[in-house]
Structures are given as structure tokens and as C-alpha cells.
Image 1 (spheres, rainbow, N blue to C red):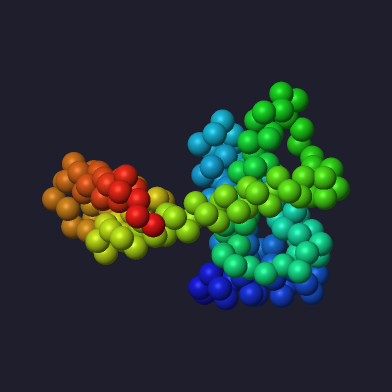
Image 2: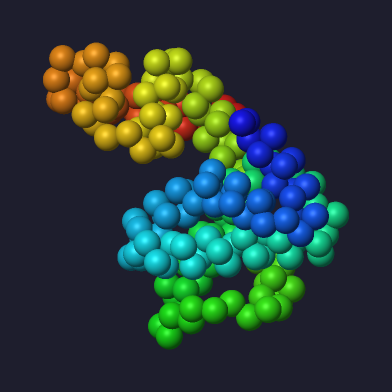
Length: 184
């Protein structure tokens, strides 16, 4: 199922008050929040809580605005999740619940985080489209599909783990060079 189809089905299910949307979004996009939270002083339970809160905010946003998905819901959920987790880290008391009117009280801030996340993913997509197809596939496998270096070595038939790591480095360098010469 492509992202546009996932977006459409999830939005339609939300509007029908169906729980299927939550399951679809959780299955497809939780991995992004989990990775961010785990890499930023959190645990699996924190990631699950943050993602559930992000889903609730998205649900509220669908009813508060005339929502149109200009980008994939992963970007929206990722932006909301990152914002929530960073706020939680800044708060020494580590509140575990989000007040019912959180979105209404922080609408501007959340929308800015979503827009920044969309800009980030759009820019990253531009960089990815500018590298070789081999590097694009390799980078997607490593960073988006969470494949470890042994899986990369096997899939791309590198002679050693070192060769696979070397190729990963070369591909990341391609993106860095493109970013330095950012003509986008």
C-alpha cells in the first residue's frame, strides 16, 4: 500500500470514527517515533505513549481544521511526536498525559513543527533523488528500513562487512556533498 493510499484510508477511517485508522497508522509509522524516542533518552513505553498522543492530536486536527494531507501522514505524525517528546524532555516532571485541549493551546507551535518536519522530509527527498540509484536504495535500506550492516552486506553482495560500511560511508558522503552545494 503506497503512502497516498494509506493517507486516504486512514483519514476516511478517522472521519468514520473507525479504529482501523489507528491500527494502520501505528503499523506503518510507529517505527519513526520509536527510533527518535529511543535515540533521545527514551524507552519503548515512552515511544508508545508519545505516538498514541500524536495520534490523538492528529485525530483532533482532522476535526478542527479542513485537513488536507499535502504530504504523507508519517511526516505529520513524526513532527507531532518529535515536538511532544522534546517538550517532555524539557519538562523535569515528565508529565505522562496530555491535557484534552493541548492541541488547541499549542496549535501554532504544533503546526510549525509539522511544517518544519515537512520541509525536512521534502529536502531529504530532494537529496535522495540527486544521488545514484544504488546509494538511494542502500540509504533507504539502512536508515528507513532499519537493516543492519550484515543484512546490507548480504543483500548487496559485498565481500565483507567493512566493504558494506565503506559503501554506506560513500553514499552518505554523496548526500553531504549535495547538501553543501545545496542548489535546491
